[in-house]
Length: 222
Ligand code: DX5
Ligand code: ZN
Image (tube, rainbow, N blue to C red; front, side):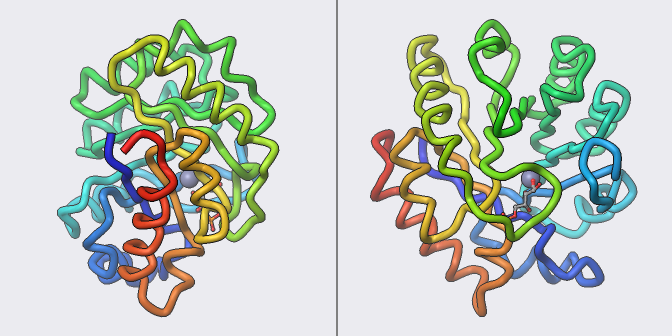
């Protein structure tokens, strides 16, 4: 699987989202962090903004739902046209049903684990998902420091995925930058979310090219 870069618009200018999306036209995805101030202590945006963004960009939208009740809300993001919708293991009460609803609505189904959540209890769910997201910071804010403590879990997740066969993307999110992306790629991640490392750069598109080159060089998968 080729390396993919998904810049997080959490670090973009929310008043100029269409322009900020256009500034990263070389990205594979646009990562949209939906936060409800309950599952995480921060509030961002919801379905109406995602619907507007979908009209304003051709780049596929990767919705990361950090909300308390993903079972209720996730299918609507898929129906609206998001290419990928990710729910959190710690929040979902009926993950199998919700993941199936996301797929039935035509989106890729993502499943996210916080840094302290082990991957092994979810091994049997891997067939229900298209992407596993391993948080490499505690969710809620951009610009936090990368948590190396998650890297062994990235390795174990990649081994579980390889043992099953088939195609399942492994995404890392939080503190991913030119300093840390190679470690993530070496450990087996293939989809990289980067907020501050892209939108904090003078030239976001160049930052994406640089991150992609570093990850491709370090990845044992490509
Ligand atoms: C954090 C979000 C991330 C965030 C990443 O809860 O899920 O997507 O935007 O930002 P950086 O890359 O700055 O850590
Ligand atoms: Zn995110």
